[in-house]
Amino acid sequence: MSVLKATNLVQYIIENRVGDITDCVAIDATMGNGNDTLFLTKLLGSKGKIYSFDIQIQAIDKTKKLLEENNFIETENANLILDSHGNIGSYVKEEIDIAMFNLGYLPGGDHTVVTNGEITLKALKYILSLLKKSGIISLIIYYGHEGGKEEKDSIISFTNSLDSRSYRVLRCDYTNQGNNPPIVLFIEKK
Ligand SMILES: C[S@@+](CC[C@H](N)C(=O)[O-])C[C@H]1O[C@@H](n2cnc3c(N)ncnc32)[C@H](O)[C@@H]1O
Image (spheres, rainbow, N blue to C red):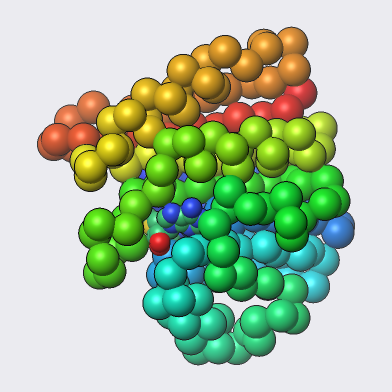
């Protein structure tokens, strides 16, 4: 196995976790260009349900197109929601197996539309409250943008404070990848 880049590392861990779970509930908290939603759709097939969020219509359009190009129909098991992950409580009430956050701005989009530490934490806390035993949340933290450092610090401080009897937190740093390389966090409910 090679040293995977951040997005592949996250997918590798999640793929292994999902294994043969049936009725898997997964969240893509930051849909963007749709790569994680497509990954989850392929991974879960008909045995899962995906809720994907973004605040930009461009992200919904791109993701819908990507799913169609790969012969998946939206709504079949992926729900593409044009709303903030801060409002996830209005959409997701059931227990959650997997959640993916990929923070920062939409690559190829408006770099001023970025995730926000307070809102990210609100979503993260809600997902934690519904996370199943052995469920996993992944976060790829890009923090080179305006407000990115504050968001990174607040998330790391929060995840560091999680009770080790209930959660396992893993942090992966890429240490030689230039300025502000992504930080990857995994939270597993024990
Ligand atoms: C780094 S991109 C995500 C990349 C994506 N996972 C992919 O596979 O292409 C971050 C995305 O988060 C979105 N975003 C920012 N604030 C958000 C919020 N409060 N709720 C949901 N999405 C948000 C941005 O619009 C942007 O598309």
